[in-house]
Length: 263
Image (cartoon, rainbow, N blue to C red):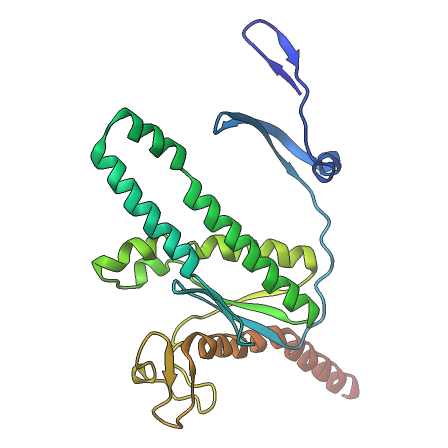
């Protein structure tokens, strides 16, 4: 690494993994030098080959939440209890140290800075890897809710605001997105409205279908199940329609072309 210093230009060696070294051959633009937690890092943007998306005719619906970080339409639930417990303990410890205000407490706060975010990031990496692996294995697309501006749309009680604003759904969606692209798995975003209130059996939409946070019970046909699994099933249906739409349009175009050829 060659950089200018206050004295002269110096060449400084750096270390990296073999995979990172191979990617440096396709580096784009300049590389940034930054100090993070007392250590120096080089941040480089590199081109990566992505395979063509696989042909799919079905989707794996993913419902994102706070109590359960993610739930897929196959019934797999990725619980958020561990992350919630860590955040609760860290929040109590931060409040306690901030009230003390001593030099030792400030040092402790500096040591704790970023630990919660790093833990949540690791959990999101693990969950996204499992979701993409399952979709790739079963040759399905991944259907996610379009949760843009969700924090401004959702009304939450004062006791729930901290939990809502610490919800890292966007990071999880980003991890799923780039891992899916590297695996050739299509990802579609669907409208999240009423996905947790709609019965996948009869299509009845009613707020009363959710008697509590974890339970779904259709007041029309009696369909019952875990609320997050039902929501993921509705997302799967919407995702399948989005995936099949290009095929329907292509088939309609071929049919119109054949009619034109006959004329």
